[in-house]
Amino acid sequence: MLRLFRLFAPFAATCLSLFAAGCAWAGEDAFPVTIEHALGTTTIAEKPERVATVAWANHEVPLALGIAPVGFAAANFGDDDGDGVLPWVAGKLAELGADTPVLFDEGDGIDFEAVAATDPDVILASYSGLSQSDYDTLSKIAPVVAYPDSPWATDWRDMIRFNSAGLGMAAEGEALIGRIEGEIAQAVARHPELAGKSAMFITHLDTTNLSVVSFYTTNDTRVKFFQDLGLRAPQSVIEPSRPGQYSGQISAERIDAFDDVDIVVTYGGEALLEALKADPLMSRMPAVAHDAVVMLGRDPLGTAANPTPLSISWVLDEYVDMLAKAAAKTE
Image (cartoon, rainbow, N blue to C red; front, side):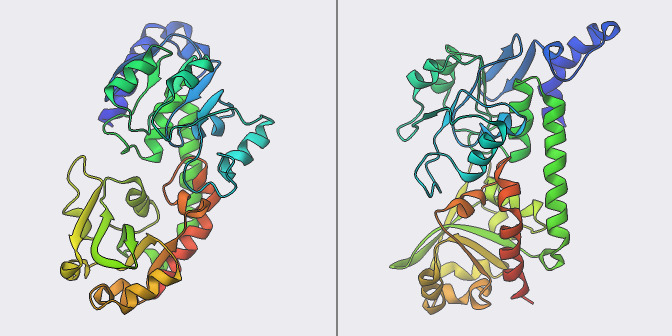
């Protein structure tokens, strides 16, 4: 609530001063909009017509709100057809009757020249890893909406809140959050077996070397999504989740630390699962012993496990079904 107050306090003050004339949460009457974030304070003087986004998935907010950006970052993970556009984004562009815009290649960082060439009125980046230098450079092109607290820690709700505020569409953003929450609630209600189960997300496992277990902490958006789906974080994952730390690592010799984990989610296939079950240490994990392991690939489904405004609806039923099947094996 404090964050939202900080975000909308300047706008609220404007509303109070204009109360007699009426004040709306969207449209031209919403401007100027002032947004405080981790890298500074951004003021957007008037409703942006040309919207650019950088970093992962920020373009999904304007798309979900009916706005086709002039440019956004090309997908660099899970792009199964190599066109730089994930399926839920392609579907929304088609729904809006919009062509694929300029795609920024961010393999080596922000392409400032490409962003500038799109001549944006605003740049959305509330879910990103922008450095102060990145932010300062982008701000010379257009007002920038950066992340609220820490790089790469913005959950899908705050991605929507901050980016929609930058569009002067805060009310529409809240309505979008409500619709997504409703879809999640319906999917979870169909699988009561998820309730109370603990889950961890292992970042990477190598079948040739299972001596180290690396995992995402509760600061990571993939782990935060577990709570939306009725799951909880085990104490073994909570304890190393210090501010600003998105992953943890322990030796497999300490695998008993994960005795409180019911479900494991990771990237890999059947070969990895067989390797885990055959390993004398990893096989001691209750989740592995019970076969309660969800294997994701480098494909759209694996990508969507990191929840974003458009991917949630696209992946929800399949992902929840996979988790529920794993949960049922822990009974």
